[in-house]
Length: 221
Length: 225
View 1: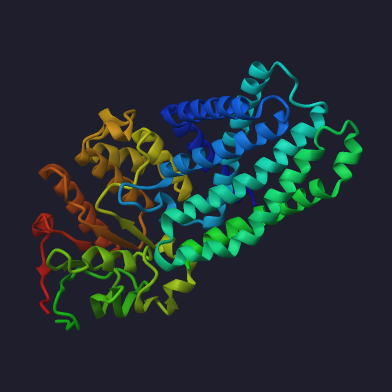
View 2: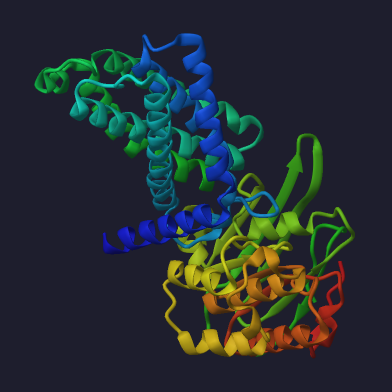
């Protein structure tokens, strides 16, 4: 177990170091998040700020993930860690944690910018909002990190296997959307007892378990 | 003299003394096709402990593909590869503690420094031999480049760093794909010395080389198809 944690933190530390040193992806993410927030606000206005916040964060995360996952690809197009003498599910787990940090950073940028341009509070209940951000980010990071790394490696007919994971993504997005609708309920206890949030948490656990196993299996089998 | 089943390949065998009886890597009837095109088929040979093998063939014959198959980087092939008695497909990541692959283009993190790359890969492989690190850095004259980022280095220096990391990992089987490309004559000598010393200690090498770096290795015996 100690070895597992050591390796996860070794990879996570390496990824953070590269990302903050390169800066190019971070600057791109900031510009993208701000631009999407501005476009979204112009079209939708301040009526559905909380929805706008999650849509903007989701789209920014999708694009950012595609760029950021490239750092793990070698000059000849392979995953650099493909020959590492460790279970690849550990690599995937580290990548999920790393992308979670990036996603939370995107949330922060979008939150600050939307708050500034709308001059309206995004949420009524801070605990609900932060909890939903965390749960949504965890599931999203699991899916995006795993998919982007797998897409770099699996080619040809193997790509059709992604269809198999669609039944997991769709309920996650529906539950995420349903939870957004409830986030501004002032009673936290009611929010935490609500079915969409509890199911979202269950999906997070499921995705966090399945994605690293699927990643390891698809790359080395 | 060994006979092989495919005319595209010449497998040269350099015999050196076998120090201890470790497992051999047994490649049996390996074939690879892309769509309807057969790259090669029915390739069989053994990589025995303490021996150096040079794989040669014309461009496009599938040398790199075969190397990647042996290094377990390509998994969709016909035939089987055994490490001792175990099929390598059943060994998962344990196989990579025994076999390491050096690709033609260096497999390094471009935005980390030489030192950071070395530290990362040594920790990942659970290696703590600091003396060996310093000795290899000296051998390859990398002292002045330790704090430089990989993307700022020349191709030859990047190659040296890749080779250095590979010899730090020190697996039982080295799969070297064009290891001499970009290297100057001094670095080629250092690499050849490392190969000879390691093979004397029972390490095996499977090398493909189009730049004649292997010509300096003594006791080279070629086996023609």
